[in-house]
Length: 154
Image 1: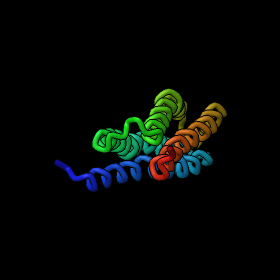
Image 2: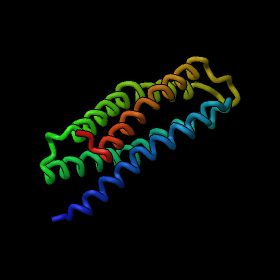
Image 3: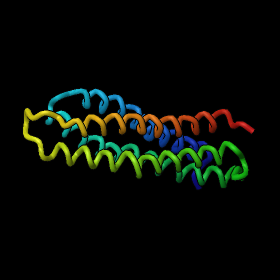
Image 4: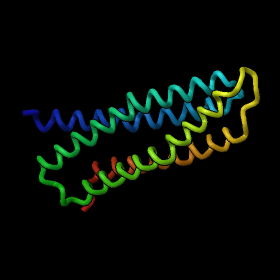
């Protein structure tokens, strides 16, 4: 059986992967989206997808799996901070799945038809703003959960 301390360490590591990748991706995608280079934008779109799967996805799975195990071990399902943490994680996942991923797919499709040196469509720019606004929401929600997990409000 895995120790409580090790389980908690895996939980924190999952949070680092999850939130860390979301924050870093928002920064470098935001910088890439300011470029007028189709190749840079295509590269950024591919990396968003890859890092979502590798880091954000694995971090989320680790957070959920270890969080559930910890809540059972601590018999803490009736605690507000557990429900808040789980709730904001679910909300963040919904925004990701129903807003961010479809936006990324549309952006990728818009870039696919462009040749090198062609102008970036205004629709791509609008989608970039949408992605950034909702991306910040998906970061703020689990940050609230992180604070709730640490402070454990009653």
